[in-house]
Image (tube, rainbow, N blue to C red):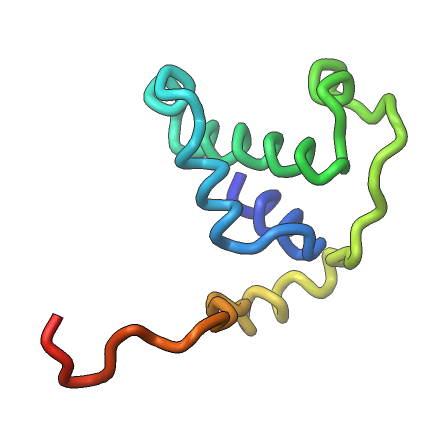
Length: 106
């Protein structure tokens, strides 16, 4: 589940925050009634559908039936070890100045 999620994430359609949100926003019955890895797969299905890579028909059939979006990038199997070793960005762009400075009382 983690490997498929990381590989799909390499397409560049969503960031780490959206991926986490997809897991944490599952319906409570789905979340608490699922194993750790089922949660990752359900969230991945949500992301893939949201970004047009699969449809609900595809998910129900277990195979591609409808036209899908084309990914920005494709991660080839031979490149996986190097990509995982390198890691990925986890920063967020700064859109406005910080409200506090080092040493400020908050």
